[in-house]
Amino acid sequence: QVQLVESGGGSVQAGGSLRLSCAASRSIGSFRVMGWYRQAPGKQRELVASITSSGSTNYADSVEGRFTISRDIAKNTVYLQANSLKPEDTAVYYCNAMPTFVNYWGQGTQVTVSS
Image (cartoon, rainbow, N blue to C red; front, side, top):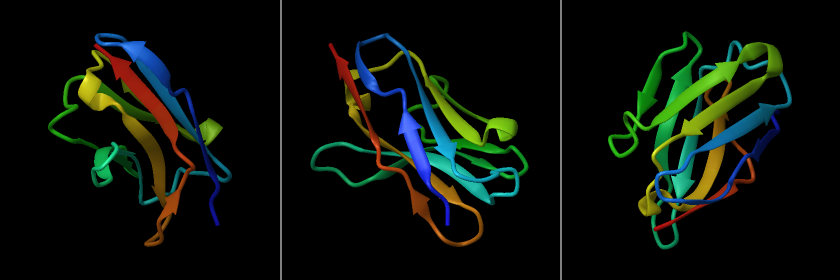
């Protein structure tokens, strides 16, 4: 079992920045992959960014160059640095962990970007 707790969401104006954090209940160093997803009202949940156990990262085209995913293994925490935010980034952001082939989800944190 893995518990994930997100924090760092909030309301910002377009062009602003936020740093989301996801704290895991156990060591993340060997996790196959961790990632951030988001879900806007009326839309499906979508992958924003992911990071593998080797440190390889992947980003959705819509956030490439603006968002950065990173991790601090010593703190069991994954981060999402979101810069140059746009109104279309407004969504609930969820942390995801796959230690093996089972998905674990956090409760989500709201990000609202106003124009």
